[in-house]
Image (tube, rainbow, N blue to C red; front, side, top):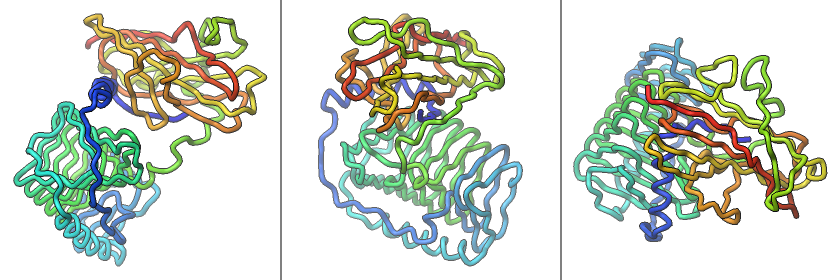
Length: 405
């Protein structure tokens, strides 16, 4: 199964936005925006002209470099994986030169929309070139909708600074890819505490990621990049293999086994021989529990053992969540293979696959999602449909409660 790391506050915002999309809030338009040639800069997750400074347990996946400056501090405790740390070597020097070319390319692309400075709060944008005459500011959630075109490109031209406020998030839906999203910033870009950002930032000055901010894309600055306990993942590394092979042994918690769901049935109400297991832990704990607080880092894992007759067949796995808020409002959500959540209308025909395989194994296991969750009651349903068969699912859900700290 696919591992996802979305906070549930973001999940809930995404779900609400899906309703707006279905209501027709987006118009389809063909734009001529294009992906710039990043040259050597394409392989860098973090690149700066003068300095890269880190505090805390940052993890950078991809190259990290500086040129013509040489100052790189905070690694360790920061970690660079699947890449090297380059201090004013030939590769970093060429990458900075290529960054300037790409920056100018983005700045010169024909504008399709003159955009107001305020972004987010449920805003849904289609592909295009968005121009801001001054600064830009993101609050809450900004959704980029590729409209089922995986090649769709989003370009944002910001004349001054970009501010991504604390806990703000950019969500990608309907085929949108972080590798096709570009932010050309006239001065500096700042990602607030625990912000979740997608796209390559090309800044005329610096890029700052505050504590806990995550970036899927690139932080490319003509001056300095400042990091603080962040996760920075190269966009290209996240846009491939949408349905990876399942983890053969989940072992989500040492020396324990996932709890078994009590009752598994098919869509005709008949008892199934399939076995479904699911459980939740907090903060790397050594046991499963059903009670958490809003400050806990909650990891939800699952394991599915299809009926013997379904092993070897093409199979689709589904994950559905019934969330009841502290105010008693119910929301049904379903998760896809990219970790995105959508409102579910409780119609089997509209279910979105969480994981698919052309040749299912005897067990399919892995992490369903993880992160901090809003207060309320959670019911997790797991199911599957094998080729030519009916839906088989956990009539009895895995449940837990999250209380406000």
